[in-house]
Image (cartoon, rainbow, N blue to C red; front, side):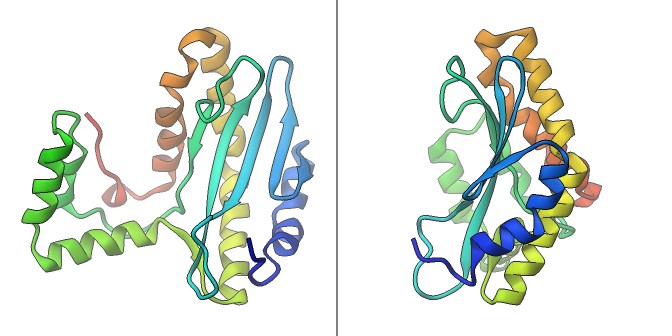
Length: 193
């Protein structure tokens, strides 16, 4: 995977000092902090779909890892905080009552303007950049976001794991997203059944 605009160098310059002060060690784009029975992992993952031309995307993953936690089940992806209002017509899409077929029909029923509003909202939640200045700006936002809520997320994940290790993976997405929602203004949030 190509390094666009010295991604790793800027990540280490901008984000690493804040996480090092919190006890995290660094390897490539992964930051790890050991605990008694697990480790806390912050993985800033460049998209495997990044090509030679922009925009380039990356993802912020926060999770607990250990031999007893199945891979990819100990946390979740943390989107870029947005101030853009959540499209009201999109709310139905998040109902747990809908089948995939019903979701597809619903998306096809939206007007071009409604689809554009949904795409704008979803785009506002992506960590992406096209220039080195945009990368640096995104990494400063990432640093500030982690500074505000990484410890809260890991404390909540740790409490969930310690209270019920066998069902731990079932609550991770909700734990991570509840912290994400706490950063958003009310008009930018959606509700979940």
